[in-house]
Amino acid sequence: MKIFTLPDMNEKFPNPVITIGNYDGIHVGHQKIIERVAEKARQLSGTAMLMTFDPHPLSILKPDTYTRLITPLHLKKQLIEKCGIEVMFVVPFNEKFKSIAPEAFIKEMLVNTLGVKGVIVGYDFTFGKGGTGNVGLLAQSGHEYGFYFETVPAITMDGEKIGSNKIRKLIMNGEVERAAQFLGRPHMIEGVVVRGENRGKSMGFPTINLDTFAELVPKNGVYMTEVEVEGKHMPSVTNIGFNPTFDGKKFLMETHILHFSRDLYDREVTIYFHDRIRDEMRFKSIDELKERITKDVALAQEHFKKTE
Image (cartoon, rainbow, N blue to C red; front, side, top):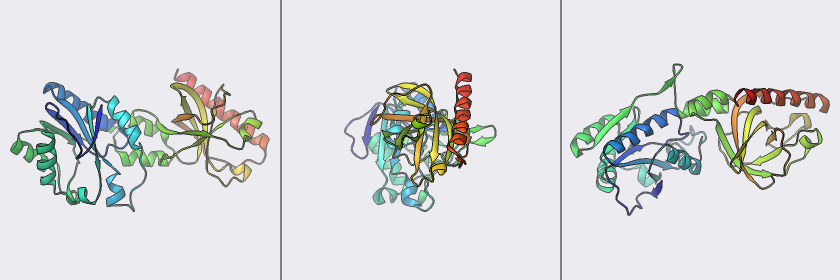
């Protein structure tokens, strides 16, 4: 996949078919749109393209309501490439860009610069200054400039509309299993293994401590997780919080990898969140804590046996 930061592009591509949006999460609904883009591009012997924005427009337009990214930009690029996009444009969302009239965006960016032959977006897509551009304007412009236009309707699951805001709330509430259904994969957090207090090791449950820049961390508690190290996936249990049994003051993400004890300090790892086990709890004694961790590990082992 080729990646450009618009307006810096010095290549031309045959019969571009493009979709435009924030695409945070690359969830099941996003994947449906991208599938249609790739399909239409094949029909036209063209190029499947996606345009997104950095930073997220809400961080500029509505900073008070902006929450956290599900997928940081580097991860979004990887997921988009896996979906079949051939060319990705990252548009710096700044004061200049947000002031572009929707008609000018269509004519100058889509028609003159990219030469689009097809535009496919979600049903509720808006764009341009003040969000005044909509699918109606794109449909009208398609007739005027001669490009194919299509909207993809809302994608639902069990009667619920799939959307990035919904997924963010699920993850923040600890409902990672439901979030994974909407995402089409477990929520993932990347980071580097750093040194901790070694409390887990002293209790017979060695842990890795993750230092991460991820914005969207699940609600404090204990989770069934999976750790990826150098392409290898291993079942695990992750505790997120402040270690209340030890009167902890520092926020930690500690992961016990089942049947594994190798030193991973300074290694880059990814943690995938499968399901929530319980809230973070304060225990009366170390023995009570060890007993509860033993149960947590047994639950995780049972979970991963079923998914093998």
